[in-house]
Length: 230
Ligand code: SAH
Image (cartoon, rainbow, N blue to C red):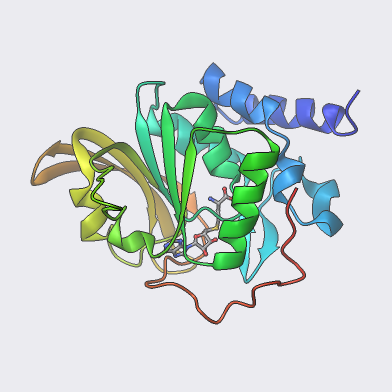
């Protein structure tokens, strides 16, 4: 039996009692080894329902928040999903189990590199990564557009509202999950695009995310010791 099996079962049960009902989401969290996405010295916290530092001032999201965001996103295996804020890749990995394809953008090069290694090590083949500024959406690459997306998930908090480029890249009928607000008063919001220029907004719950920042971070040290992959 895997070292983490008991802790993992406890976590899944806790998520169910906290209200997560979507079996596809619960199964995804059950099969994904969260310890792969966490620096070695903190691996013993992999199945606690908490966010854990991953270096460069960033964190891997709390399992309940990952489960809640994925559930509220209503993803199916026909959907193409865009994620902003790859981190070490945990949320993208969860999405890869329920979506057709996942595109994910990270502004810190060392985290982007760790995420790529994690996807490779876990044989995840339907995730495409990009190092860049996710506030601008997914760019046209070699003449190829991936937008519009059926679903968009932003795992860092926008100060006031979702970036315009992301709303533009969402399909009509599509859903975007995004935390909005200042540190200490962020709310996870669910946007549904009703037409090219209208959308409905629902408040889901208070959350604590790192801020969504523009541009790439050139100052990040390439081989930050705290950032370790699988
Ligand atoms: N999705 C991750 C959470 C990572 S924390 C998980 O599953 O654990 C949020 C991440 O968003 C950080 O790594 C941060 O560097 C990144 N980020 C912040 N602003 C960004 C931007 N404009 N474009 C892309 N990534 C961004």
